[in-house]
Amino acid sequence: MLDYCLKVPLVGFFLLNLNACDWISQRFFPSTQFTARNLGVIVNTADPLSVQIAEYYQRQRKIPQQNIIEISFPANRSEISSEEFLALQRKVKAQTPSQVEGYALTWAAPYRVDCMSITSAFAFGYDPSHCADGCKPTAVNPYFNQETIHPYQDFKMRPTMMIAATNFTEAKGLIDRGVASDATHPPGTAYLMDTSDKPRNVRSQFYPAVINYLGSRLRIVTPKSDALENKTDVMFYITGRAQVDKIKTNRFRPGAIADHLTSLGGQLTDSSQMSSLRWLEAGVTGSYGAVVEPCNFLQKFPHPGVVIQSYLNGATLLESYWRSVAWPGQGVFIGEPLARPYGQRS
Image (cartoon, rainbow, N blue to C red; front, side, top):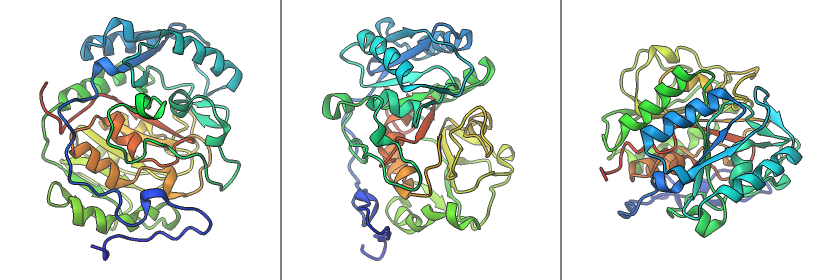
């Protein structure tokens, strides 16, 4: 076992469960599941697209009416201040039913609250300990690699994901893919890319352990390439590049996850690098990216072993992605939160 339990050197910082093989588990989740009952949908009533997305999502996922949380603020900007956010958060808390354990936001902008991503701000509350000025660690995600289906009950945080799109056609396609993925147990491949971009390719050191422990449950390959091209079976696409070429030549299974480790992928609507929205527009169901410079700390990006294992064990996209990032304060989660391709029909 220890041959595959790779130690990751990082002077001065403990890597939580990123070192050794503490993320590995063959346990499956209990029959009780995170469902639409546990998801609060936050809608900006001043943004017609947000309203449209929320209404469609509520119908498709049968979200209880009491879980629809309405706030109002000027849209079409990348960032809001912490002061404005705190006022909005008070309104959200006042409307949140006790059974809600996570949130969905129905917009692509704003994606940032001062130095935090907006998904982390709604998850934890605005907290500068989740920020960093330069290459520094940030606060720990207590939900990292935890199997509980009650993150609020257990950790007093509500994992949050943006149903992010710049038009309704893209939003509808994203939602429909998530719904279509449920309990399909899709055949597919995890492509863990070994790129030539050394600073952004740091997650490749995890690949041997991922293959060793999850390869019997899913086809996993590690192409030594900067881009995947003309593949028809993509379920996971993990890479490290500032720009990822040829993504639209591939076909992604409903429920597919893809992300690229780079500095500014989470600047969804105005990034100088490739926005994580490009993945959703290519047919992916969930992605992740940094909203401010995170440096290439492994803890600030999804651990491929954790996200794949959690998904295969039947968790939702929201749960699996959030469990995979140890320091998520500077990163934004986007996609269809309730997608559950490896779950069971309820």
